[in-house]
Structures are given as C-alpha cells and as structure tokens.
Length: 350
Image 1 (cartoon, rainbow, N blue to C red):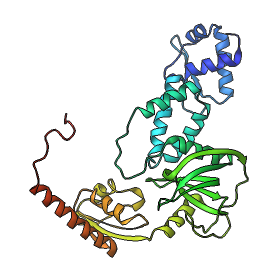
Image 2: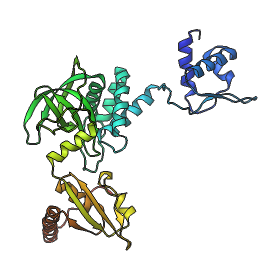
Image 3: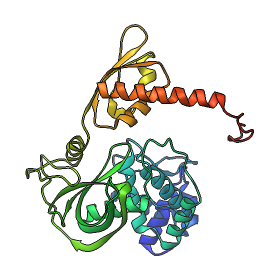
Image 4: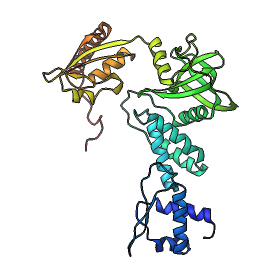
C-alpha cells in the first residue's frame, strides 16, 4: 500500500482494535516493510495518537489511553450501534449524558453515509423503548436539527404547539438546548416577537434550518419565559435563563416531606434536582427543597419512592394528596366490588 494517508488510516483502524499487534503482522496486513511500519507509528505519534511499543520476540504495538481523545475510525456496524445508542440517550433526556449525547449525535449524523442513516432509522423505528412515563420522548432528529443550527448559528423555522393547544409558526435564532432531566427546552431569540423565548422541544414540529446565518445576541440576565415580557439585556447562562423562565410560568413549591426510610434509599428514588434528604436519626429522613414542578408530578414522584411518607408542606400539595388518596381509595373499593379480573390480561411472567 503506497498511498501514505490511506495506509495511516488503515494502520490506525487496526490499532484501535483492543489488542497488541506484532510489527511483522502489521507489515503483512498493509503489504509494506517493518521499517515502514515503524515510520508510520512515529507519524501517528506526531499526530497525537498514543501508540505504545513493547520489545522482545512477542512484542508489538497497541493504542493506549492518552491525555486527549483522538479521532476514532469506525466500521459500518460500529457507527450504526453508536448512532442508535446516542439516539436513545438523547431522545429520553437521560440525566447526566443528555446534552453530550445530542452534541455527539449531531457530529456523527453529519458524516454518516446515507446507507447507514437508513439503517439507523430502520432500527430505531422497529424498536419501542419501555420508559417510566415521567419525561417526554422526542424524535432525535428534531434534537440534532436544533443542536446543529445552534452550533452553526443558523436560523430555524418550525411549527410550535403551546400549552393551550395554539399552533403557530416560528422563526428563531437558536441559542442553546437545555435538558432538565425530564424535558428538553430550546432557548432562542424569536424574530417574530422580537424577544427571547423558551420552547419545549416535544412541542416543536417540522424544524428546518433556513441557511441564513446570524450573530448571536447577548442572552438577558433577567429573562422572560415562553411568550412573556422582555428581560434586561446583558450576558447570561441558558440554564439560568430557563430556570427563571420556569419560575415565572410555574409557582415555586417549598417541600417539607418526611420519609420512613433511610436517606440513601430515598435519594436513589428521587429526581436529582429535588436534592438529597437528610437523616432524622430514627431510621427515616426529611426532604426540604424548592422546585417549580407541577403538584401532580411531585405527588407522583413522592408516591413512587415506595415507602411511608408525610408531607408537612406546602399546603396545596397536602390538599392535592388528600384528594388523590380519596380517589385511589374509591378506585380500590370499586375494583373489589367489580367483576373478576380477566385471566391472561397481563404480561407473561418468566
């Protein structure tokens, strides 16, 4: 193989296999001399690839971990597997890897050949994820379109459905995507309304980049939420802007909840943004936190902890739980007085 760039790529592809390659075997694979292999290894090292050599009759070369992540070469099967995994991680807003998943997916799909894009879409469409139902599922193609436009500073057009069902067409300058762990939001400057807005991504439809470039505007330090008033101009952070917007849209709940279980047990079953409860010294724990989530969602999450709990506040949450408890009691009583449950209606147990 006389083409040096092509040979280096082939050599790199071989070295990224997790094994040690004897120099003679590499030379045979690439149809060159062992001396050429040694020169090519030096070239890869100059490019930042950490290639380690071991001496002796069974010595060879292998790629090791370095200070920085070098570019990876993937075959077709590896590229499809990674793209499907990233789509799953990005589409369900998995806390901790959500934004990184979208960035990586946007980069990967930008360079995927059309034949591989078709395979990824076919596999994605043929599978149905089992989710817990406490977050929104989003088409990853929507996320990658928004992420690419924000990164490339390209104006977007999309259809948007507001909370009351009103449908509008929007043209925006996308700033950032932000995940709350439950949902994705787009922070953008709305050209039609001449103001900053936050958009729930699960309500965005048919997004496409217009090709028109823009210079990013400074994000307001004090910003308005979706379809609310203006904020003061300045330099701000997208996550902080979104948090302020959500506080304006949803009243803050100050939680005071006692759980009849150890703090470690409860912490593992609560969303991270609610914080960690503190042990009470008697085998239970107490959570004091503030959030802007809905009463319905908070009540459900507290019940899903699966232990005894008592809500001291806020009063509106106590009232909602009383009503919910009464409805559940009536539902259970009605089920006992009804017909016998159908046989075989549930999933088969292995």
